[in-house]
Length: 237
Image 1 (tube, rainbow, N blue to C red):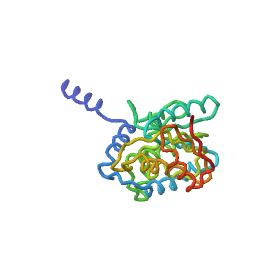
Image 2 (image 1 turned 180 degrees about the horizontal axis):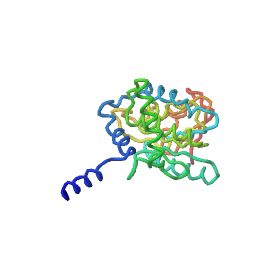
Image 3 (image 1 turned 60 degrees about the vertical axis):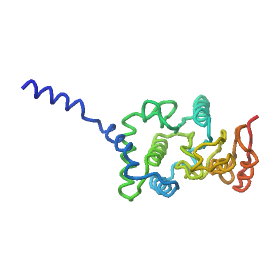
Image 4 (image 1 turned 90 degrees about the vertical axis):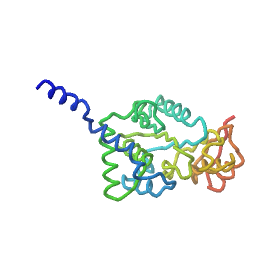
């Protein structure tokens, strides 16, 4: 009947694409895998996909900070792209589309790319019993996509803090940047700018340079860099 045909049309309109199904599953992830600070899940995931962010053919610029890290990440990525590098950008949160979080040369991943690489990440999590959270899965998705799409430089924005952030599984960033330090997420990061600076400074790595903005407790970060044997610490003027 005509009514049955209309109902079927409505049903067909409501059917989700594979991309939509996977992203909806991702949005529900934290209902089943509660957020827990630490790098254990992300270390396992990164190793399972071949530790792409530690490979010599990819340079990583790692950015943390209370304010400004998103704009610094975007400007850095655009500058490198104009210098003819193939650049991956990982930022959060998104505004209108999940795909905005993971960009290559200024373009968000396509739905087909998200579908392909997100399914691979889910298969790994299920096969190896890794209870990864929304942000851990999304980070691994970005790492996988960047490696498979031949990105030369990755600009990586932390999600929260630095020391225990999922992005901090990388071992050899070309540069770590701390944009600014302010009082935020104090129950997690600490209740003074110095304590928060130490959490953000967790992205500083041995033998690698650090660039700090002007609105930071520089002496605290300088001490952190020295303790971690960073190659040098610079401050913007």
